[in-house]
Length: 404
Image 1: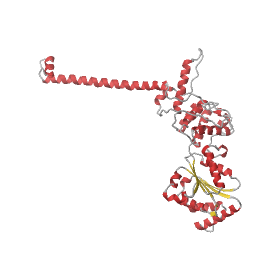
Image 2: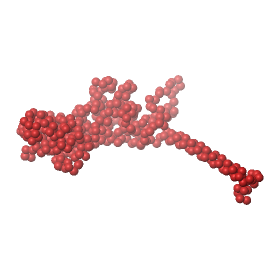
Image 3: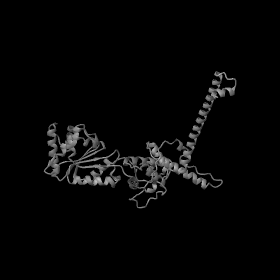
Image 4: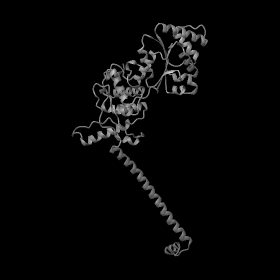
């Protein structure tokens, strides 16, 4: 067990990026697709395809499907597609306990069909789950199509669940893949969680690990809201929360705050607006210290937030964020601060005025230099004219210059 789980009194690590059914978040798209897949398998519909971005929880979803059918399913798991359809058939034959008499596809397919007929006669089903299906070659896709054609009357002899990244849809939508696409019984897509789902998901995993929402402070929840304002996938959420807990543990804190979340985003290389929230908290703290100075003889506690001067070196784009918090699964409502992140604080205006004043000062100095050069050039021109016109004096030169 990791040291930080003991530090925070957790039973297990809450944000491990492993497909553990114990932590499955049975809500939103994940719950809907799980129900859809289970219904399709029970009715023997055949080919099912699930796509989604990296880390969206496809593999974890497949683990839940496996647990939904523990007894009456002959499960064949493929971590990645084989190189070609011949390898696909030989692999399935071996998993079904068949020793093909020939390596020719026709004979291997015959032996696979006979094995599937025996499984169905026993009242069971055969489910093949192929992960990383976006890596399939055209030959393997055609092999999948032929397997899906194995039927006995109206009953599909084999159920196929393909899990892949979004590139799989590009393959399926190609014109030459029309025969394959027409045989798909169910096509589902896992997307990013919105911010409400993200917060519920985090709380769910903390609860499963034996913790409570108070493990994250109010500012920590706000920082997470800002970090995932545009949505998030389980893998990214797990990574950020795990690193935030690590940071808090390293600082010997009892809960995760905004500074820990910000430090975690930096370690991950995430570009978020959490930095500006930290600056806002810093400004509020300084104003509070100015309004309520420490008593004489005491030393003011040093802020753990970064100095406001760092904003001059910041390269992030300032965005106005209005976080929403809706933890439906909570038995005890979480108190997220009502005051939202407003990036129009006077501190930003002051900094902008200072920068503008510097640019105005530089512009003024440049204008003065140009004016001085112009005057010098003008005087030099008059001197040259007077010299060449053989004028008897300055007044005579000016009269000649002006044409009197």
